[in-house]
Image (cartoon, rainbow, N blue to C red; front, top):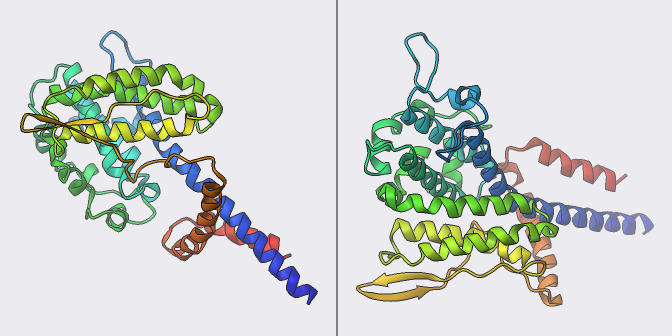
Length: 345
């Protein structure tokens, strides 16, 4: 009888350990995926500045991973000689770093979110560097990126990256992932480049926050600047619900509100205006509902909500364990085995 009770106690301990580990893993990954993404842009600025009067601190070709996407010269060396060469190489590098190599850790909606930000950067940098060969992203994609083998074929995942993408989304490959976001591809370069400043401020906020609510006050000044930029963008009279302008605003507002929710009890951020949709000369305000890529929805401090969260964690345990065989992560599996052995000693 005592052995039976001990076994039950150990099983309860195991469930609690797994529950808190899963909860920590989810909470950690939601924030850190976006923070990692912003970190890639910070790394990029050291090699390829996004300001005309600021030189990069490191030579462009010293970043071997970016250099790998440069054209191959007659000498056999890879080199980006023009700004257009560099922009194409950086686009492919950002795509590989933030989507392809991390596809196993992304949710169904996050690849589309990250593509939105990459295209915002691409539009901005084309305008900054005065590359006037193209009217929109679709033209530069068709001429320089569409048939690039580095972009089509990928071997950086534990298994074929395209297979993982298809398992997570409706897209069969990464080429289709970009081409299906046609509305962003056809927007004028001058229009969407205005979003870059807001995105850059938002990234600085996530980096300052660093997954710790005690850092919320560090983000307050940037929050004020972000809201001002966002509200200015929201005044555009041409916003329609199916427009790329709306998609970019919606993505920015979701990621801002995610961070705002985390800091509300520490250092409240200003609220952004609802997106103003213009329909046949009239104006309609649409409340922005957090998208599935949200880090977390706002949490009430009530006991009921806290209890709901705990119960939800326990409900999620069978689900996570049930799909564990699909995840190509040996370390993750071994960790649970280690816990089980320890508890049942």
